[in-house]
Amino acid sequence: MNLPKLGAPLSIDRLCHRRKIVRIRTLALLMLLVLGVAAIGLGQTQEPTIDGKITAGEYRNLYYSNPIRMSLYWSIVGDTLYIGLRAPAEGWLAINFMQMDGAIHGDTIIGFVDPGLFSDKLELADQVAPEDGHFPHVNDTEVGGEDNILDKDGTENNGVTVIEFSRKLMTGDENDTAIMEGMGTMIMLAYASEGDDYQTYHGAMERISLTVDFFNGLVNDFPSGESHTGSSNRDNENVMTQSQSYGAGFNSALPVKSIAFARSAPEALDESFTFEGTIALQCANDGCWFNLSDGEDEIRVNLRPAGFVLPQLSQREVKVSGKVIQVGDAVEIQATGVTVY
View 1: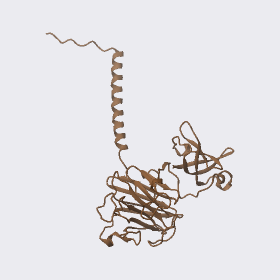
View 2: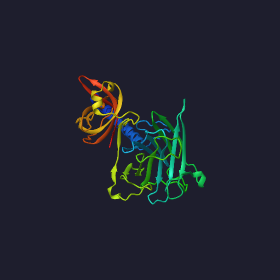
View 3: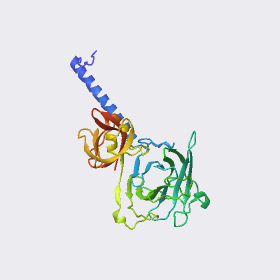
């Protein structure tokens, strides 16, 4: 009986070599699986929580208007647009959507918060100005339309109002502006410092007109002197501006102080404020600190305690929120968030 020849027994060295190859192949496969899951995760967008509180990273996009000190946050998830509004006001906040061709003029979401002892109450309306003008606004439901606000909430605290809501990109309502990819939307942001009603008129420095591409995050500021219809006779002077937040971004609820105040006022120590200026000098290694200058004074801003860094952004304008602390003989700001313009 002829038996098949068996292969020569593996030496210990060859056996270890094969086991090493198996381990390497297994690790490579695991890495591919992890990378695949990570890539899928990066392509997903989390729905913001509509609770009247805007947290760092909750929305994919942020625009801050320095002239009127109002913030617009937004995310698109599927067929739904999520909006957050924040302004230094105790009256109403509003956003007005207008198609570029002017077909829908007064598609407005406007509301105010009635602060209560235990909880705040939000009044939010889906309105339209049916004639060629912003007033009088009427509820969509009064002119054959629908209330297309899906979810809503708001808070008012220390003179700052936050309103969040969601709506479909395309509601199918003839009174609503369709938000379409590849097409900018003219909007107006506005608020009234006081007045929990829909009649109080905003001041001259409480409104701004913009063109927003909600899909790619581009914002085009209209220059001063824009008309109430969103058109402008200075269109060629429009300037593209974008803001980017790092960490928690700047906190509009904090008082704005000068660098001189932070450096010299005893009451500034261990307290949190917002500061404005430009990045004068920056860490060249990993961007964990920078010097903030307002043209008269300069102070070091430390990002490391909050666990975030900045890319190289020398001479960019920024708003910084953080705590003023003593470090040896010097004073610095331990930042919790930075917004770059």
